[in-house]
Length: 269
Ligand SMILES: [Fe+2]
Image (cartoon, rainbow, N blue to C red; front, side, top):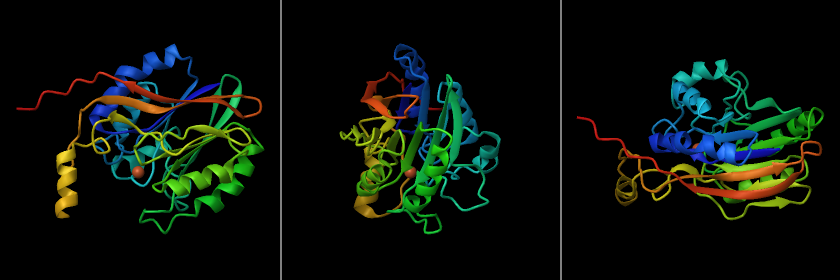
């Protein structure tokens, strides 16, 4: 089974990347399942419900999120209507949506899990993902060994530690949130595919998908400034993983970094 994990989709340029590249890439490479982080798709800050539906129509099977899961208010209600949109599983009881999704790929049962890290987020109310993961993964393994763990976390060390924590127990641990494609894709002992960060779908020559100027101004002045979407050198970034459907073990990993043409829209007015 071939699974494509895509980095955070950032803004209209990111949506354009998916629109212009995913269908063909999926067909050319015989991909069975596409999992992408979508929490920056709506203007870089959150995921509106309509944008989520559009992205799924373009070929993304499962959308994951992170600390910005509910930045767009329509997702609070929308997430309950669509089980293929995940928010981190370690949100408190009673929060709308879910962090675990079972899907069938061919005749193989697959589970996708989304968790949020602890470092550098203002979220002390969330369950410790290291403690929460252990029991949950054991439970899922009684149903299927094919488990994809999407870890939305900021600190490299936290993501690397999670990779080793779950090595041999899941098919893949992939990191999101940093929006910088890392060069450490590999298969850990026990057959777990791993990468610290999947990068982004959107402008690659930018500050996390945003135009540099306002971001530099923020660092120089510490005055909040509106971020601006960038359209420089659009790319689709992520990781292609081949997994043995019976054992759940990863067979190969390949970093994806594809240039995509996305024309910048004409300014309004
Ligand atoms: Fe994030």
